[in-house]
Image (cartoon, rainbow, N blue to C red; front, side):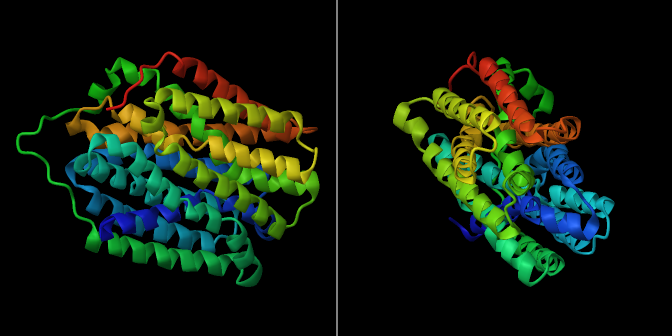
Length: 386
């Protein structure tokens, strides 16, 4: 862990925080700004979609400009600036602008680290290193739970966002100072994004990449707050505790997934089995939405744990990419993963508005059906341990 990797990990802590903190702030934002669950679903989905759309230019920038300049500049402008805009927000539109800026700022940090791992470390270590940075970075998911709820109740949510703006700027400056770009071999081949899309093996991975992160990411990032508040009348502090449990499960799941490809000698079937269990838990939540807070939080934790296959899926797809397209390859996978979460978050907001009597079981069933479809296609994918 070089200083540069540590700072990119810290930047990823911020990225995990920003994709998850709206769930805890949902009650106070509705009280102060009048932003209900559907408005926040749109803002959360906007973060994911802008983040995803940035993966194409980020991939180009990683291959041509290097991770140092790409990550530091975008985090400074988008992360720091977006958090400041959020702190000054007086309407839902301001929150949308802030979340879009933050999505831009967070878009390069994980892929910058993955680019360095792919360039400077042995291929068989990639899945473990990828899981490690997500696991450590997911501390941001925890900070976005009870600690954020505590800060909102004591300092106020605006003050907390201004502190986050300053922290983002400091981390961005540290990345500029400490990250070292990997050297490229002389005479390395050139390539285009279309070269990646001509790889048949990738097309059987992309559908699951599109839907696998969405259930855990969208539920933890937003729906867990309104769901627990409206179904069980939990307070902001209690919601913070519940999201803390789900966040801890997501971190534990990430660390557990990391070495399993070497343990079982397969990436495909580790990913398949984990997502199958996550799907079962999602349908369980759809069938038993109001059984008890304990049952619901337990199922949310299972979804978070088994839904943490993101780094293993990245490792599976990365094994098919040529070295000179590493940056664009991992960002293409990230585009589908985060873009899928964004589009499904938008769609889940529409489900919430359309199903007035029992919106949350319908939202959970929607995520479960999407994950089942992704698994069917992924079942035909070719395994890869390189």
